[in-house]
Every structure is written in C-alpha cells, then in structure tokens.
Image 1: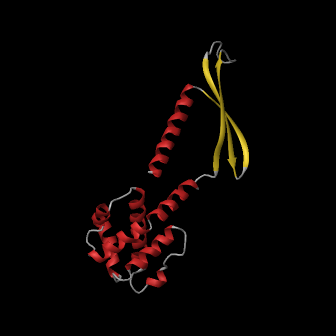
Image 2: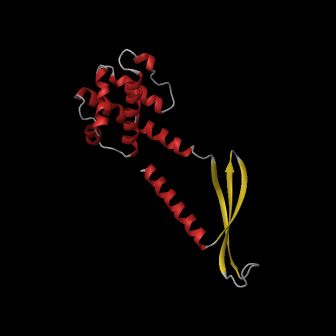
Image 3: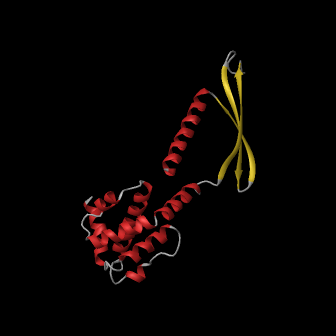
Amino acid sequence: MAEGNVSINLLKKHSSKDCSSLLHGLVDGLCHRSHPTYQEYSKIWTLSEWWTLVDTFQDLIKSAVKESWTKDQILQRLEGLSDDYKTSVVDVISSRKEEIRSQLLAQTHNISQTVLSDFDWKLKLALSSDKISSLQEPLLTLNMDVLNDEKKETLSVELNRDDLKKLINSLEGANKALLQLKS
C-alpha cells in the first residue's frame, strides 16, 4: 500500500486546478481517444514517474468502476492527497462512470469475435465399441452453430459424462462473470 500511496502522491506535483483535465485525459486514453502525452508534462514528471502516474490512476479508475466503489472507498485509496485532488478524482470518476463501464464491457466483449448462435443436442447410449465389448456409456452429441465475422459454421462435439460436467461448469462460470459485469 505504501508504494501505491507514493504513486498516488505523484499527482501533487501537478497543480490542483489542472488536475481534472489531466484525469479526464487519462479517462480518454482508457476509452481509446487521444490521451495526454509525456511531452505535455515532461517539465513536471520524469518519464518513469509519468508512466507510474498513468498506470496508477488508470488502474484506480478501472477498479473503481468495475467494483462499483462508493465515494468513501475511492477517498480511502487517495490517502495523502489534499481535498482538492480528492474531489477532482471523485468528480472525474463519477461523471464518466458509464462511459468507462461501456468501454470496459466492450474490451471484454472483443476478446472473441466468435458468437454461439444456435445449438442442438442428442443423447446416445454407446453399447459397445471395438475397444471394449460392453461400454454402455451415455454420449452427448452437441452441434453448435457459431458466427465468426458473419460466417456461419457448425461445430460438432461428442461428450461423455465427465466432459459434459466440465462444459456445464465452465458455462456457469462464464454466466456468473457476465452477471457480475452487468451489475
């Protein structure tokens, strides 16, 4: 935590009046717009300090939005800064919260461009195979229609009981993660 406070205290090198525009610039950078450059602030911070400041505040802003921090939780992480700086940080986060959340969701969504559009399943009972004379194991055939860049493909997978349980557990985990992002 001491290292975090040192990083946060780097903001004190900048005037409290102009702090808000710097923080809005950092949010613009998070949202893939033009962001502040080191050249603009090279008289205030060294290059190492600049990158530390940018990383610290972008991480703080992302965490505050992802985890829905209250104003008090944000202020707690800004220990060591004067009230002017704290107010600027809280104001920037609260005024651009929805924009930041939308960008974070878009980044998560863009991890994979492949989308499941439809599926069909059939349950079979494998009575025997060439390896074992009496297998008697249920097998699930899962046909998934996926869209990848507007191209439709059908993937077929045959799952035994253990594989099916793993698939269900991973889908439930993905659903929980999605619900947490939405809330």
